Length: 598
View 1 (cartoon, rainbow, N blue to C red):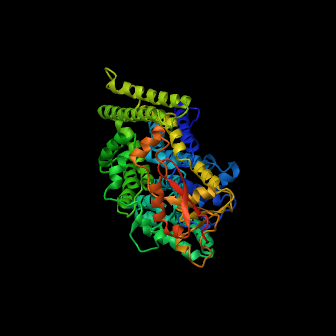
View 2 (tube, one colour; view 1 turned 120 degrees about the vertical axis):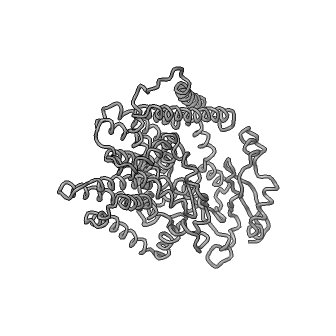
View 3 (cartoon, helix red, strand yellow; view 1 turned 90 degrees about the horizontal axis):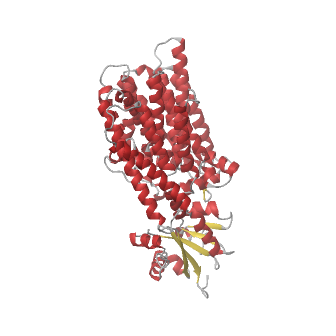
């Protein structure tokens, strides 16, 4: 691979721009990112077996993502860009592992090399994969680990024969596969193995290659994840409540997401993110944007490719096994989130790459795919232009240079796509190979999602500013004790991130009268309780117009707060103020009424 080649440098530069803007050009956005940042900060100075939130071990996922993000925060500073620095490494690892997998799948010819590069770029720029890779969570490392595991897996499975070179190839392949599985596990528990394990089992069953299950290379290399997991489990078990933590990790958090089982309300994972029949398949076109039409063509080609005897049949079958079994099993689970399906996008990227070869000989299908993709990009560009213009006449306006850069980028992409769609006398045969044309679309998509969304990202940054909210709470508290009443994870996260250590503590209403030190709040304490609810359409419109009288805490809202927190009211506290972030995440600030006895 010659990186001096322009065809390699341009996609990498476009991807670097896409990743850097998405990872480093914004603050922490809810949901989840503030919590993940607080967990990473908790292990930034000591690699604990599990991260902590408000002093309690967070036994939902293994700690590798938190260790790496915490190390970056210690080295680069406690800010969002530092916490996301490892995400860039995960994205690069996933890209080059995907490239290696595609080279093994497609071969070493010049045409195969172009299709491999194109497929890796399509994978990295698909909507769901991009969302996962820029989001501060454990799924980016999981995705990279699965890419590595599948690359090693196919390298081992494609080694035919029993001679020394074939055995060495299997040793390398299975060692890489198990290294990827180790990374994936330490990102998100055994659930991270769903796609690679199902892909392996389904492929060897389809190809009738049961001997792979008995190879010494497979089981010897499996000692790597077994040893690493055993060492970590023993460290967790050595904690004072180790048995409870392990039960949460390996029972509540795995079985509880797939099946409705009885458990503590705090760890009832089945109660959130409810699944519905066929949800993942209905949302699949959105996950694959803007390559939805190419993916549809690839599925049609896979139907033929997996059945007809050819040199590519095993490759088609491997792509199908990497895409569909995991997606089908996820559809049967109790809980559902789009990010759970991200590893399945690897299989769809394989199928799209294989389809590129077929498109080279199918001019009519090539025109349909290219024109349809141009239409999708055009529509997204128009939406971006409209949203940017609307926000520019609201309180969330961006600086004018930023707005002009975003709008000009979106307008340029829209004009380019419109030219492809409506150019008179469009050529019946594309002037460039299909892989090169698709990379042009990927470049336009990267520009749209990076520079084109800068103005919108600026607005979301202002609306999601939890640090400002924390500063307003701290200003209201002054030097008085600060108590968080029944805090949720996001509340604990911003307190842990932005308030001075030792200046606050949390208290649960259920234990307010128990003999556990959590008695009635001190007389001069500022008590912070979550204000339930979210903004209505009218409140959003009023805020965007700059109406300062709406939405703020009214007397009626304060009265509702009193009804929602009877223990605080009974203790002589009343609402004195409300701090709120756009969208409705707000907090009531309570102080004890003068003359009330503690």
